[in-house]
Length: 166
Image (cartoon, rainbow, N blue to C red; front, side, top):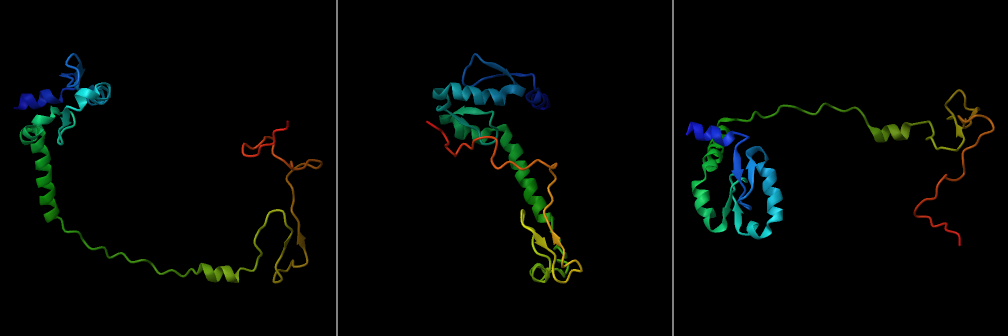
């Protein structure tokens, strides 16, 4: 059995395509070939069923129940299920003792206590009355060189604006 198991893992082993008996495919490429060949041969694909334990097993629909009961890959899946149920019973999850740290922040309170005015682009900003510079008006400064201005329109036509001229 050991030799059979090793042979089935050989990536260079040639496997016969269930959709076209003339196709001999390397084991490492077999899953990709199955997908491609299934699309190319829909009439044969309708007659075959996929094994629930190994998608490489394409079996005639009439024989799928027999294949499921005797599939070699079934034992691997069943063993995994048994191991998981055993481990689940042995593992006892420790309850977490983590607690959320106390929070001293109150964003709503901070919002109401905020003395500075919000920033709005293109408007003149006055300093608050509590500020020592309350008489100073802070004006918008442009980063453009003198004599240059920001364009008033975009350099291209927006697709949703139909400015076609007759």
